[in-house]
Amino acid sequence: MFDKIKDLMQLQGKLQELKKQLAASYADLEWFSGKMKMRINGNQEIIRLEIEPSLFSDIDLNNKLLRCINEAIQKSQSLAAKAAKEITGFTFPGL
Image (cartoon, rainbow, N blue to C red; front, side):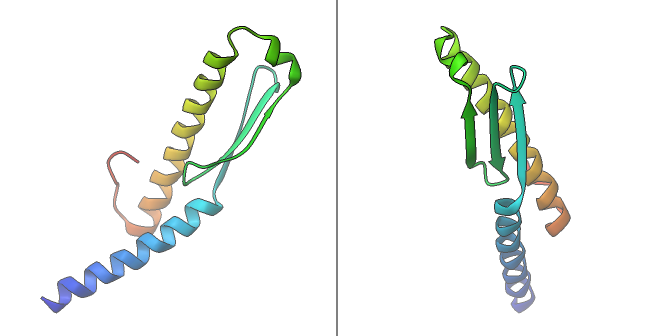
């Protein structure tokens, strides 16, 4: 029983390390010939968003922005899955 508790504590430590690594992992993305740029970290937090003023006159800006954010989240999830596998040796569904 104590071995199981020890294993769980080790896993918890690995997951804490994973969280730190994810916060330090970034993906930089660009769309529309560089008119929209975003940096997202492995914790799926948007760190930077730059939009050229010329895009603000675009009627379809809302849809473009949603598409870009969703793509950035997918990239962040890939970073998280890779880091999780490296630290824990496991593949986590949904990451």
